[in-house]
Length: 251
Length: 200
Ligand code: HEM
Ligand code: SF4
Ligand code: FES
Image (cartoon, rainbow over all chains, first blue to last red; front, side, top):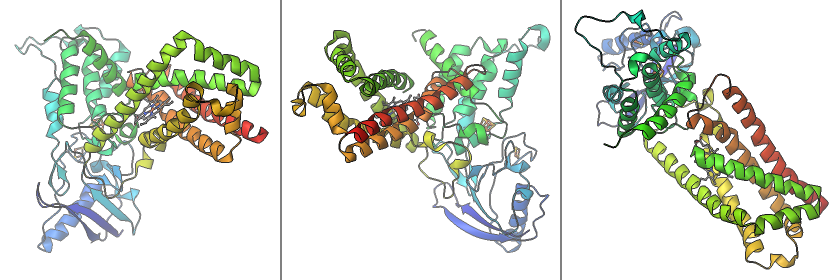
């Protein structure tokens, strides 16, 4: 099929951006969206032009590296998939496709469609971990009984790949779904209890410091999240935060 | 936000219940209105209510400004209708509409009843009903109630999520209650205005 691409281009972190229009031809409907962009870039390189910079790594929906705001939706029109898993069969011959980078004060643009998502790493560093003994005498994972419901919920939360689509799609650029998933995953498990109070307070403080917005429960994140992370995790983050705020000792 | 919102919801429910009395019986409404105006507990609550409104509005504006700041560059092409409800995205607008109405409403009733000469009427019921005799009034009121209904369509259930209450057994019920409540408020208040207009 033949398509018209309208792509956001920006030469560097401080340059001014612009939308550019590129035609691509003979795109197979079996291609992934990123493969379609590879075709475009090959064309640009052959023409002696600068290829479009975009993030990608695993190309199988597990690393969270790919991004892109496609036709007004994070990871495009399909549900439960990342951009690397988005098939071109979701589009029609002759379509115009708008492609923009994630937009948030906390995600500065590096180049074209590539944004800096290290704010999410800093939130993880602030508390998204458990301290375990790494002396080699690792305890058998099944030695601690965990209710099935909790194990399932923790597992669901743990499927978050940190892609940032929730932030990109939220009208407030809020990272609450991401932080909710990370806090839930550990708060639900016995291994996460030791740092439970500090974790939520520190991660939320870091989240605010990075300039993410506040959650107003529009629910857009849950719909656009490629891993179907549930809003229940945001509610859990809220209750964890409330309880931790009340419980925390005087510093 | 959620605590002040839920507080305003309890106030609103009581307000609606008392206003509905105007459709039932003139004396009953006057009696209830008299009780509200003289009971010391209710009078004390008035200050709490004013504070509740001020906090809710103040927090709402700060929240909205912070959230606007979190996305300085807008998308050139965005499709929010694909993933969220309009009512949830327009809280500040429906809220501000309610605020404009509130100023008007306070001027016409609160100020008249408390400090004014009641527009020459000798009881609360006649004052209320007389205002709805004007069609402009009825239209403004009904529009405000619709805005309030849309505000509550999102607000009611959102307040529970904000407080951390989301549960597979209760949340579906809360969402249903929210959908019913916002219609009851919008239709209930509007019905009062319309009935009095038609009867005038
Ligand atoms: C009787 C009047 C009102 C009632 C019952 C009411 C109720 C509520 C409730 C229950 C919420 C949800 C709280 C949460 O999710 O945490 C809310 C949110 C909000 N209200 Fe009101 N409200 C009223 C008037 C107003 C007014 C006058 C404004 C004027 C600015 C306003 C602005 C907002 C804003 C900005 C939000 C949060 C926005 C969001 O969630 O996106 N409200 N309100
Ligand atoms: S919650 Fe979903 S959308 Fe947000 S970072 Fe995790 S996987 Fe991506
Ligand atoms: S490239 Fe790894 S999730 Fe898309």
